[in-house]
Image 1 (cartoon, rainbow, N blue to C red):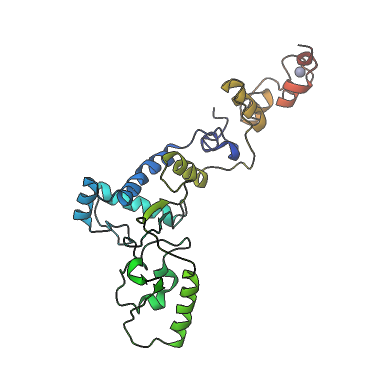
Image 2 (cartoon, rainbow, N blue to C red):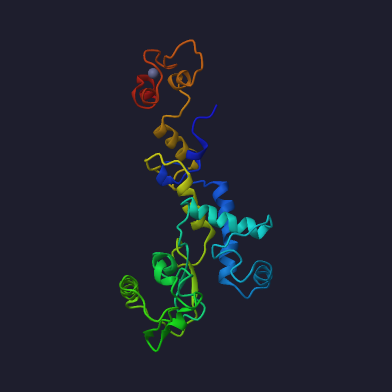
Length: 272
Ligand SMILES: [Zn+2]
């Protein structure tokens, strides 16, 4: 007999669970780590092999990879959890340094998504769509190269919005660095990613599990079951469909055996 739903058992303490965590989230967090390693360590041998097989961005720039290889599965999972809202769309973002390795329009270096998506109309007017930030930011000024000499009023007002958006951005001498936005310091951590994924999947009972580290685990779990009213009292067994001779308390025999009676109200239990 199952007393508590499994997805509630493994849910975080703040969701009313026991904080065990799900295997699915663990598996996905470990799989997504390969995406992180690919962008973070582009010079590693395996990353070079992946690029040789699947192109410079290896499917991470939105171009769908066809195939059933391990890398294809990893990229598919990455997009699946992003499109499903399990992880944020801009989970991988660039912390700008010298701007030489970050594509101005295509890469996610601003916190609210790529500029290509935000300023679609003027993106299509650009000559070099894969230009880097360093190409555009020259001598502390933003430089543009359009396919047409004059741009329309509507497009120039969009350009003004873009300039406002870029206000205050400056490059420095450091290299551009990738960040995993849901982790504290921007560096990928399996535990934090797993918890983040779990929080989006698991049942939220809207209650907080109280967990005291000073008392044994089994006592904490007992208190948790009391809080959820999931102990095998006569009343609960009967609610679960079990046929019993009677519902009375086995100690006093006067009242039906509920959790509140057994633990707090039963006169014989109180004497003990
Ligand atoms: Zn009793």
